[in-house]
Image (cartoon, rainbow, N blue to C red; front, side, top):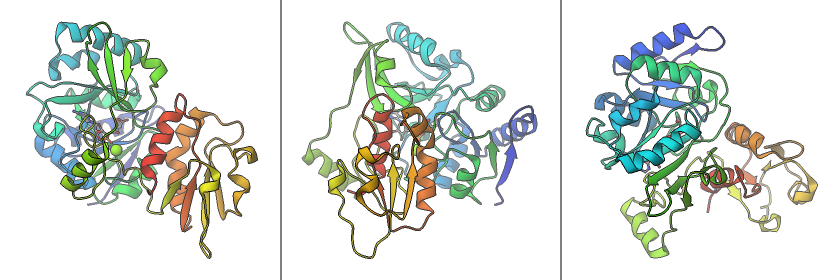
Length: 355
Ligand code: TXA
Ligand code: MG
């Protein structure tokens, strides 16, 4: 199959929107821009179309998908929300939609089981990207879309990155420019709670804990015990940890082909004779203790200069891809500050790293 890229920015979007919508209506998959990362979309109500997403990505069927809406009100067509829960959901929608917040809610039967991996809940969001919004509205149905990368690999934040991942596997990529958040959406499971709404944080992302605390109590899922982790690992044939709270959130993910190591402190790095190393630095400053540690073959900075977490988020997957392509034996990553967006960045680095 030949993969076409169609440009969709600044007044040139119409042709792309029409092409993408026609393909989606015909049960095909299309790569689409969102404000977080590029998604591989299909009509979420068409189980055969959704099956093509899993095939193109080599994605295991136990990893459920997010559905994307064109209008806020559609949430009631696909989610079974009690009036009490709706009060919380509406507050979250008011505050964060359209935008990078995904809510896990009880699903209605109209959503095929393949979308949710058989779970009674569905993950739902409304993207803030104008092209994605237009296409969702035009189709009039939810679009199921995971990140447009091969399973377990680095998420794509540009049309070129999607092409590298899925060339020949999908008919169309809509090029809507570089993604301006650069990290996948924050995922929460929403509960009414006894005194206060309970927001279970399943994946850290651009909507940070401090933002969510305006609406309810943010709860982090419990870490699995070592015994439970081993049992799950066995069940999955060694694919990695999977928390029952966040199915599909595998411990090993977002991985470059080149081994990546994330160290807690600079002194943990012991270079091997004859190997070449790249440094993924936060802000390129000596005082962080990594720049002077070694005569690095390559150095890339997430936020050159002062170290801004927003800039680091936008650049993370792009820089990881560049380092993966530069031919070194290993990438050494420096953690960023564990506050605000830094929580999501460190989460992705941890999942990308070898243990
Ligand atoms: O920013 C994003 O969220 C991007 C863009 C394309 O929208 N999408 C994305 O999808 O990151 P994906 O498939 O790479 O990650 C979706 C994750 C799953 O791996 C799983 O952890 C979680 O969402 N998920 C989906 N449905 C769920 C459910 N019913 N319960 C709990 N977690 C769920
Ligand atoms: Mg993904």
